[in-house]
Amino acid sequence: MSDASSLLSRIDLRPGHRDGDFPGPAALRGMVPRAAVDIDAVVERVTPVIDAVRERGVDAVMAYAEQFDRVRPESVRVPGPALREALDAVDPDVRAALETSIARARTVHADQRRTDTTTQVVPGGTVTERWVPVSRVGLYAPGGLAVYPSSVVMNVVPAQEAGVEGLVVCSPPQAEFGGRPHPLILAAAALLGVDEVWAVGGAQAVALLAYGGVDTDGTPLEPVDMVTGPGNVYVTAAKRVLRGRIGIDSEAGTTEIAVLADHTADPVHVAADLISQAEHDPAAASVLVTTSPELADAVDAELATQVATTKHTERIATALGGPQSGVILVATVDDGLRVVDAYAAEHLEIQTDDARDVAARVRSAGAVFVGPHSPVSLGDYCAGSNHVLPTGGCARHSSGLSVQTFLRGIHVVDYSAEALAEVADRVVALADAEDLPAHGQAVTARFGTRAPR
Image 1 (cartoon, rainbow, N blue to C red):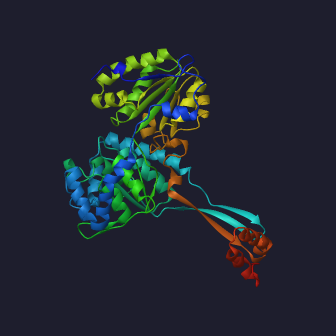
Image 2: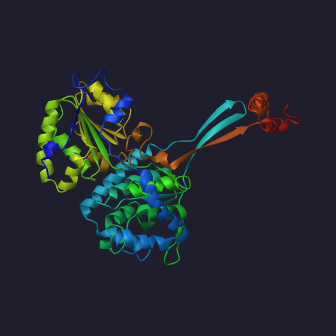
Image 3: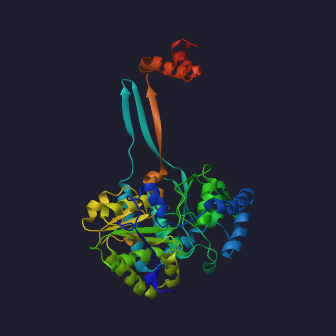
């Protein structure tokens, strides 16, 4: 591995190091480091997989499991006793940590549940907005370079708090565990009270969730209405192809962190936090935006030490040295805010003087972590917040997973004859203006008259 101090490239946006005024949002979006993922190219590769699952069901799923996961499960659905066995066998410290994660997530997500609202528009005329949960949801838990029982928690808890009745956890079969998902996935599902877990991963998992099928023992595998949860690029491409047949939460990409820091930040903390997200994947993005060249130098030195001593050195070094990672030098915190808003990071840490005030001015981020004692890792597991968040700049227009993800707002219109009569001429006028006279007739017919031609 090359010297870690040289891994993070630099972009200098301070006066004297750029041409003209400070770049606007459009220019900044083109300048900040960003992982390049061509979902469209992958769509061509997953479409045949989706077609095969639609046509051949579980037979196709099993064939792809042998091809991609190098194991053929006995069945798609994991037997109930296996879930309990996995929970009984889990390390007590891990179980306690999962219980803490679940409890804190429930505390936060329970407060997100919306209540129905009825508005009296006129006497005799009301519109009620009812919040109705999706009936059945598939929740994807990845199983690639790492195992993510925490993602089971982050998907299941908001769905349960929303009132979703049917939950399916999907995770890839593991040859090491006899064709079942990782035991920690099973344990987390059991701890959450989810009894339907499918041993299927990748694009074929999304397809099976969308179309359903029949398991190897003849048990029906009912389709879902929505699929949520992070996955690799093939899972993301499958969600894009099947969107419409199923609802999706987002097209989640590789994880990313941005740290906005000034001279008050501790370089040990900043380096550790950049490394923590680079640990996920060689394509993960770690970006430091700082007003302090001295801090940037100190972080480089810390990376040289910390990367060399961590477990996944090669993976982390690849991520930090890639074009998706780097350091951006700015003259002021205000300029730094412009940069991080243009970047719209999945995870944004604020490690500056007056961090709370600075954080309150952030407009675009999946989640914001305030001050020296709120690292992203806390949010990954035990803050109570959700770690399924928008990536690739989508935080400019989208939110992370929440109770609201699993709710649909339905407007219920209830007008009396008198209330309808009071506005009938306005409806007719607008219908005529749009050359849709039958719309007006649908109102006036209730009063024994015809809409004018």
